Structure formats: structure tokens, C-alpha cells
Length: 77
Image (tube, rainbow, N blue to C red):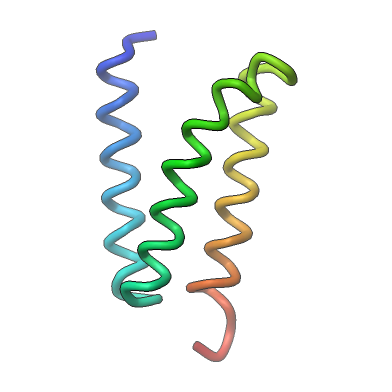
């Protein structure tokens, strides 16, 4: 792969997600989910060495999706 392109895609996806979090969950949810997004990216690399690249990506994505569901997508907000 092309690392700079991957970084640009990651940054663009993070910015789009943060925009949504800000409008749907406010600043606290945006900070929490943004931190989790960055932490997940960092942890996915060592995790990939143990379980493989795609399982690592899926695990990190699942954790982020669950946190998003709890913090900004829950019914009644």
C-alpha cells in the first residue's frame, strides 16, 4: 500500500466522524470518541502482529462502533 495515502484516508475519515460526533453528541462525546479513534489506530498495529491485519481492523472498528452507538446514536438523545 501507499502509506501517505492511507494516512490521508484515515485523517479524512476521522474528520468526517468528528463532525458528526460534534453535531450529534457534543464536545465531550467528540473528545471521547476522537481519543478512542486515535488509540484504536495505535493499538491496531501491535494487535495485528498477534491476530492478523484484518481481524485487528475489525476488532478496533467494532469497539469504536459500539462506543459511537452508546455515546451518540442511542435512541432518545
